[in-house]
Length: 179
Image (cartoon, rainbow, N blue to C red):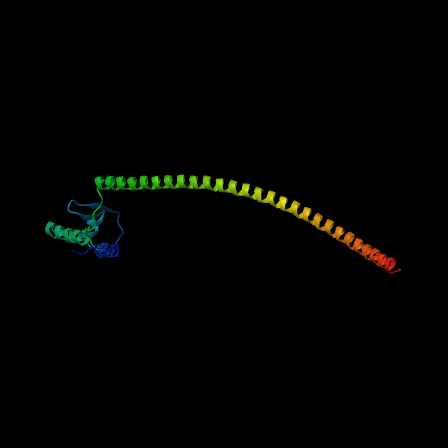
């Protein structure tokens, strides 16, 4: 595994060879390495501020080669191809279709459960009406029983008064018999 400089290190390398900020272009080479080119760097490398010095082609080639080598970055990650992206899209579409089917099935189940709940609600309402009718019948029976109890109470009073009268008649008869 080769060393890949960070952006800060690349900037430091640029500052080592140049004194200005230049516009950069970044290209990917066929061997997978990044090639960074800077507009205007050639003049900066060849000329030193304040004095002009002459450089041979060999020295210039070596300086440029060293400079480019410092800026080389290897790519260690692989990038997806169109076929990989299409396969990934197909897998995602299959998963999406499966999820849609699941949601549709769940929707149908929810619909069925909703219908069952409506039927149960209607059944409960009918049972509530029946219970209410039975309650009204029980209330009528209770009123009838209360009336019967009141009637029995009044009959009991009459019987008590008749018993008292019979006792008094019996006493009179006893008195008449004893005379």
